[in-house]
Structures are given as structure tokens and as C-alpha cells.
Image (cartoon, rainbow, N blue to C red; front, side, top):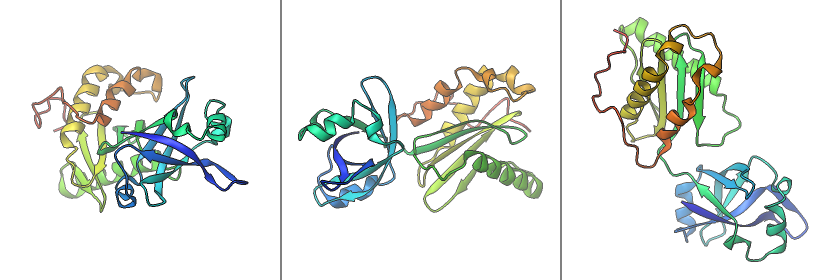
Length: 239
């Protein structure tokens, strides 16, 4: 989905340099904007620099949205002059809006250390290490109490699907109502096959996992196609 940056948010004298007004393709009503609140927004400059943001609320009644970016736009010379000088800047400055149901992907080592976390949501208050520790603690509780590993955790607006192998596990966070279990399984199989030696006795060096981002990033594809379809059988799963 694409959006067009209309202008800074603010008045004639005061500009909020981290806040933009964005017109989203296919959305013409204020009520429809509420459906995409919280979505991640990425603007890529001609030089390749990416500035991330998040849709926070509707702006006006004609389908425009307010986006809070992580950086001040004035720090990027390709963006700020166009917004200031051109009334038609929304026709030339385009940002992408992520609509996938998958929000986060974690790869965590067997002792609870986080190997990798990828997300398509911008929330500076979240600590991915804390989330990884929470997953590990809940997993340990389930094993001690029920002698079985935990497969999923359901919250009011999020679901977490977990797939374990002998030396690590993958946790996929999705919108509630979306089943991420097969994605978690497929990712764990891919990681297990490519990094089996590194996972046996991981020293903590993240350089051991070259190419890992490319594998985990596939979870955010709008139409995810698993490579491994023999779920739930998993030869490397701990028994």
C-alpha cells in the first residue's frame, strides 16, 4: 500500500518536523483511517535512506492520516525542501505502508539469549530483549508445569506462535485471529537447516548468522508461501 506525504503537521509558523500528513491510496474517509492506525510507514529517499514512522490517527475528514516519524524530516535534504516549496509535493513523495498480519519475528537461543528480532512496527518504548526473556520464562513455566512446550500465546489484539527446535525457537507475533504457527514452523526449519552447526554451541557472536535477516524477513510477505509443508512433523524438534 502506498501513501503520499502532503505536508508537515503544524501551522504556518510552527512545523512539527517529525510529524507528517499522509494521504493513503484507496482511503477517502476518516472512518477508514482508523483501520490502519498503528501501521508502520517507511519513506525512502532518492539516496536510499529509510525513515520509519507509524500512523497515529486520522487528520481531518477526507482520509488523510498523521504519521510520526523517528527522525526529523528537515534532516533529510531530499524531503524537507519539497514539502516546504511545493504545493503538489504529495504527487512526488511516496512512502510505503506495511499491511501484513505478521508484526514481529524473534529467534531466541535455547538459554534465552535473543539472536535476532525483526519488526514492521515502530514503537520506541518496546524492548525486544525483555520480550524474548518473557517468551523464555513462559516456555520454562509450561515445561515445568505441564511437561510440554508452549505453542501459542493469545492476547487481546496479538497472538504469538512458537516453534521450538533443540537449540533455539522462533516466535512469530501476529494480529489476533491470524494463525502464525505454520510460518513459525517454516522459519524454524529454514534456520535449523542453515545454521545447525552454529546453534549447537553458540558463543554469542551474531556474525555466525550471516544471511539470517533475509530468511526471517520472508515472514512479512503479504502472501507467505512456506517451503516446508510437512508441519507439524519436525525431525530436529526436542522430544
